[in-house]
Length: 459
Image (cartoon, rainbow, N blue to C red; front, side, top):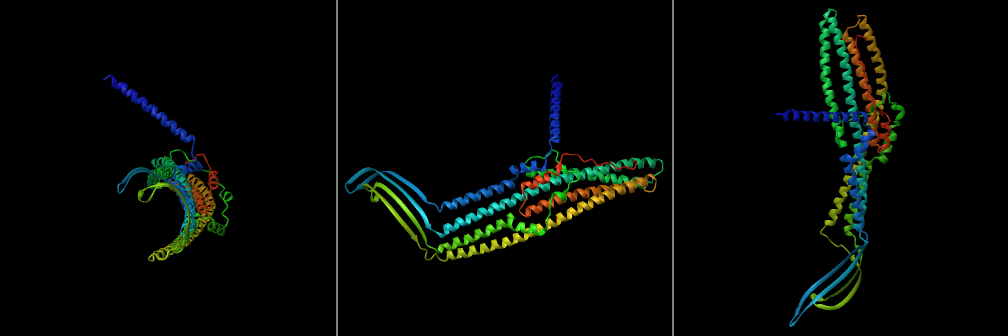
């Protein structure tokens, strides 16, 4: 029984130490927030999509080298050591046999082998460009998930700020209601609004964790630390140049990795068709060989002899049952499929570029409009508070104006995020999304805390 207090004391000490460690970790996260560039560097090493694309490109390079090897000299050596019991009539003997040979062959003309190498080169280009397309898509997705976390945090803070405002007004209305200076309808309506905000707060908190889990999926670790946020008044129009739609369209036509990948696929299928048609063509190979042996015909013992041979092998296909022609026709249809996929990719890229350009232009205009709307909403809320002081407006009118102000602040933040994401999508589909673009966006982030003041009728 005396051991029980001691065990409890040890457990309490362990819990205390664990709490201190957890507190130190939390404080460390707060002191060292992550920014977009930091998470991007981590995603480069952890995102399966990026790693898979890089591995596919390397695999294509190895396959290209394999095809090239078939065009280079093929050298082989062979040795054979035997112990033979040779019986011929009444003659029987045992002897040790030796045979050594070395041979080299070189392709002089072989159309299928050459076209197979050309096809592997095109496939290497295809996988390289497809990998670049996948990597840029993963980068754009990372940025989208990062700003999704920021947007969820903004939404929660705006809801909490509005909730504080409603709570202050509810206290004032309860005081007025007790003195019979406010109607019951105002009190009930403010209480209902507060209950709704509490429900919205729970949902907003859940959205933060959901968005953080989405970010953790590409980073490969839990993202609990604080994230750097967008500066208060980012100069988006001065920082980013939208140029014109024609500029981005022409850039995408020559630089979009998806289009380049599909073009390489067409080249690969064209080479595959020539490879299949090459089955009709003759092939010429040079072969050099040298042999030394003491093994004769039918394993009979022989005096040691040496031989060297130089051969020019010419193979002329005559008839293969129609399989060569069928293979060539099938390769032609595969080439046509690749051409149609190329045209489909071009149309998709042009659609995405136009959509991203229009969204970016619209978001930039919405940012300017939201700034004006926020100023107007702020003035309207201030006017409503003064009117309430003089008894012109009731508390619900003040809360409506305050809610409109928070809504305007939310619209401004959403417009800023929308522009940045649309600009990233535009860069991605034009094939020009680079590390410098992330660094440029990262300069608009810093470590700060936004506190929205609680608006109250008490002034």
